[in-house]
Amino acid sequence: MRHLRLVGDTAKNGTGAHGPAPLVGYLVLVPEGTDPAELFTKDGTRPEMHPVAYTDSPSAQWTGDEIVRIDTARHVAEVEGRELDLTYLEFELLTHLVQHPGRVHSREHLVDRVWGYGHVGDGRTVDVHVARLRRKLGKAHRQRIVTVRRVGYKYVPGPQESAGAAPCARP
Image 1 (cartoon, rainbow, N blue to C red):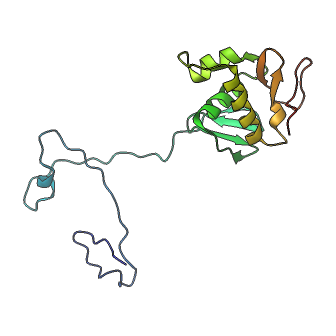
Image 2 (image 1 turned 180 degrees about the vertical axis):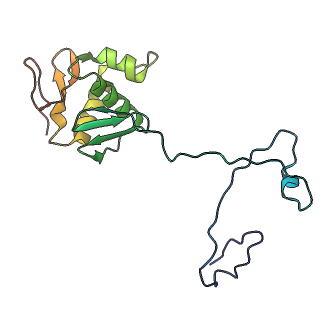
Image 3 (image 1 turned 135 degrees about the vertical axis):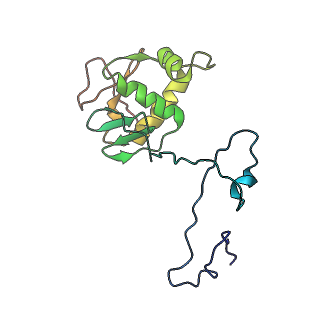
């Protein structure tokens, strides 16, 4: 097996007592017109270097209820603590519904808000994405996205459904 060798590495092919040295990468930003090779010469004057703070992830911005939670900062959706594997549009659709609980959204409104005004398509696109979302929410929570006949869809945070609304009849 071939090994990478670090410049100035004194370890002999990983046979040292503590194993090979870990690899560390750096991103070096230099002013325009500077020759990066000059930064690594022994006798050259080196510019002042400042470390850049790194955060692992943006702070969480959860919305939703105790069952379905959406973190818009990290683009993550969870059901009962289980992360959902959603496409971009599925995530945007679920986020829009969860952020407006109990409000009925027409298919046209959802196409405009989620897909964008320039989207060429119809309400059937919304129906297909809602069906996928219900599958991904799971049998216990698929009824949270309620079909309001001849109108559109709404998100219901609790297990109850309102009158005039039809739950998903498909398994």
